[in-house]
Image (cartoon, rainbow, N blue to C red):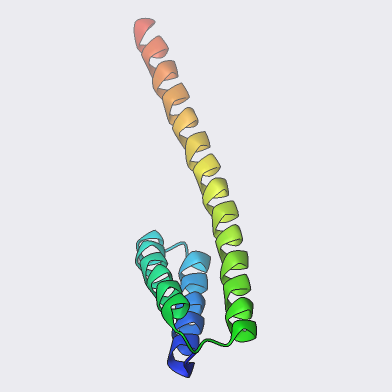
Amino acid sequence: MSSSTVEQLKNTSTALRDALAQQDWQAVGELDLQCRQAVDSAMADPHQQTDELRDRMQELLDLYREMVEVCQAEQQRIAGELRQINLSKKSAKVYQLFD
């Protein structure tokens, strides 16, 4: 694998981890696409070093597992907020009936 492919995988993974930590979902989406392209490029390289590639892919796999956990937690947080908003709306309607 060429060093530029290794660097691309490493840099994209680092940027994706940073965007995830900042919960910059737009950047996460863009970097996810870049990660996919970097993986495709790495897999198409006939001169790849399998140990190095395996290490990078394992790092990406771990990162994507972390991303799934963060996204699920964010989804649950937002769902809780929506439930609270809906409950508040219902309470306000009931209050208006007796006003």
